[in-house]
Amino acid sequence: MNEHCTPLQADAEILENHEYRPWLFRMRLAAPAIASKIRPGQFVMIRSAWGNDPLLGRPLAVYDVDWDAAGQAVSLEVIYQIFGRGTKRLSQMTPGESVRIWGPLGHSFDEIPDARRIWFVAGGIGYTPFLALAKWWMGSSPYGGKTVRMDSTASINMIYGARSSDMIPPLADFRDSGIDLQLCTDDGSAGFSGRVTDLMTENWSSLPEEARPDLVVTCGPEPMLAAVSAWAGERQVRCLVSLENQMACGFGACFSCVAPIRQADGSTDLKRVCLEGPIFDAADVAWGHR
Amino acid sequence: MTARPNDTNAIVDLSVRLGRLSLRNPILVASGTFGYAREMVPFVPLADLGGIVPKTVTARPRAGNPTPRIVETSAGMLNAIGLDNDGLDHFLEHHLPWLRTVGTSIFVNIAGEDIDQFVAMATQVGRAEGVAAVELNISCPNVSHGLDLGVDPASIRTLVKRVREVCPHPIVAKLTPNVTDIVVPARAAFDAGADAVSLVNTFKGMAVNWRKRRPILANDIGGLSGPAIKPLALRMVWEVHRALPELPIIGIGGISNVDDVLEFLVAGASAVQVGTATFADPSVSGRLVDELADALKAEGVADVKSVIGTLRSNRG
Image (cartoon, rainbow over all chains, first blue to last red; front, top):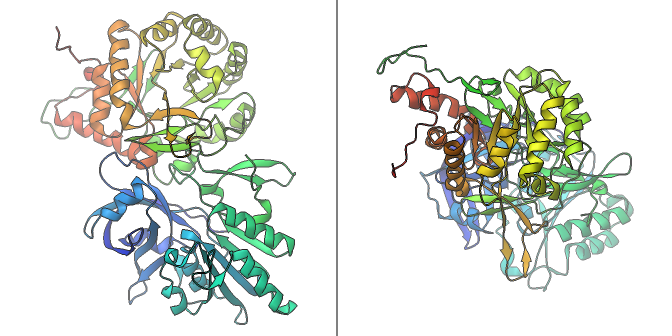
């Protein structure tokens, strides 16, 4: 929730647009200037570079950055799910074509988490910010040109929830990075049978007090975020949420993407997710407030 | 300033005049699409613009509408932000002092709940220094009073007249296109002494999720903007310019490239505002200043004023 750096606009060549599933793609872009600045938790806006339709960019979290042998950032990777016309259009684009991209946008996560036992809890497409975050905090990738490393005794565990096994994206990158990953599905077709909060409760109960988490970071569909926030609140565990919302611009000009955030004086104010988020302390989010 | 065609070193005169208002060039940015300009610093050299119109201010802070506040439509978008802002006092204290330093003309766009409140706000803005013009938002489709006032010519006349009495700055009336005949409100503003009119604000529209039997916007309806409305806005600029050739016009509606700019200028606009295009191409407004000069130079035009209102009807 710290770093907010100056965004750039660029036309970026598509280096790769890989279809994981008919509804899930991974795009690699030649955007070195943005790639060298972006930090975990931040996002970019991407749209097809030509024409007026679809008109607006789509906000996508940084999934990973690729560096060359000299340590220079060369490309940026995002993962997107086809939701509507904008993401459909992106899925039809081929390497060699260009997209218009602007970023880094929003605030990144803190450089060093003030925690020792961290749980990542993700659902749906909300898993995409966590690979870079884990690699950053574990000291294996220098996002934003900054190598950080959390305490060597600190640990990261990740829970990923989906409705059913056929909705689970490829998660090999996470396992390859040494992240302890547990799956759960609503229908029990893969991993633990139940919701993420059910698995969190089961894990919690099986752990001695000193092994329980002191930080939960969550991203995914809003009902899940609200449930995870409530779960953490009941156990007095600090919880960070990465929100997403309908955005037109991504840089604070349009005032579309507001979320209800509690203020120091107890009132609730609508804050721009793009500019003041996307990461908020879960205790500050007024879930369900309209 | 004189220049010959084909003289590649010629400097094109981009300055324009609208009533009492002189602008460095005709490329402005529209209220509600440029934040308070601070947000745009990474993307646009602000001092290059002809002017900046920050987001509408109301007398008191307004939370705005619930979300979803926007939805993309074909070549455009609907918004129902609902004039989310921190109020005039906050604007004058926190935003205006910084805006004065950016080096271009600053318009202050205000919306009152009724004529008296507009006049009170204009009085306050009239005392502020470093304001190039006041733009009266009598056309926001997302708060009921804005549109009600903006469709009634008698109210527009009274409003502009009373604002002129209390506010020394040039006055621009931003009109709604949601009327049968755009010349009627434009004439009302002109008769009452407006320095210019901004044509047009957004068109009322809606988007529907038929499976849920619900409108997509939390506010049900919103204002349509973007390239989809350009032909509608262009037609209105042309109609007003033909009926009221002495009334300076700021053209707005789907402008996203230099051809769009020149189409509005020849149709009768003395300046334009770039709006929704900024969301899809954050740096576009700054680039358009250079591209306008280049396009005019390529045509052998030395002064942008010489193209304004030069469109001729095919019907004689």
